[in-house]
Length: 401
View (cartoon, rainbow, N blue to C red):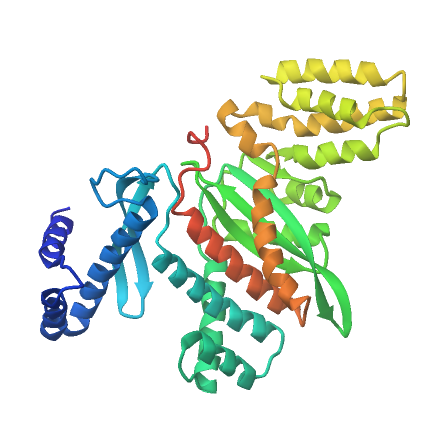
């Protein structure tokens, strides 16, 4: 803490009006006296000042200024470490209250770094020639880039992604699993390959992307291998798994996570209900009855409402009533856990954003030349999202039991 205070005091003394000649001279002196170290400190000062100026513009008022056009209020600063080409910069990001704000300088930097990384990945996975990759990188970087540099960048990207996929894991009481399909060329034919994704929620209530894998299908062997890889990296302490209903996945869970409770995604279960409705039964009414079961305050009440629902529809269709009895209880496992967690754990809709971000990138490629190409791009997207999650507030309000 003392070191931090000393640095803040030192920077306070260096805060300058960058529009004045004195300010410019002080920045120059800093660079002359301290060389590259001075460059990083100077850049930190200038970025901090630029972000404060931008916040004032967004708010429509200067600090402590009374203004009828004010759109919000300053709300202190949040520390953020940003990796740059002159090293790590510890910035003070201005916060606001009453209006959304994020410094465009940081957003542009984040986007450009992601664009560079993903552009290389997308072109590499499509088998684009090194010459074309070089041309695009030159546009992104604003300078000439050699083929050797491109090759090194691609190799570094692959190494970085593999390191992230193999990073050690720990205890995750809650596990969410999902899969999506992408077109991939395999053996001269275009087939649908399954992209398996696992998200965990840690004991302190934070979510993290545990892993991703590509396989030819959602067969049991592929899910089982995927779960085995997660466990080999240290995943343990799983108490509940939330996923859609899939025979291969359920068999794999019984093999690798025996005794762990399974929660069938209520969102998909509600959609499945529509496929089993008998003629003459209102979709709106049946869906409302099912929502009442899912939204019950406890398991006892949920079971009671389910019994009433089964009794209501049995005279209309015994087959539909039997389906309700056999399937709906699979979506009620979440009642065994704290009420504060149920809304987040009763579906795997939390993975929808992941799928949207992946789809936004993969539709550029359309058809992937091989499985490794799909894995490369998906990993890059998921890695970025996971980084963002680590800076967000807790996903669950309390720690898991």
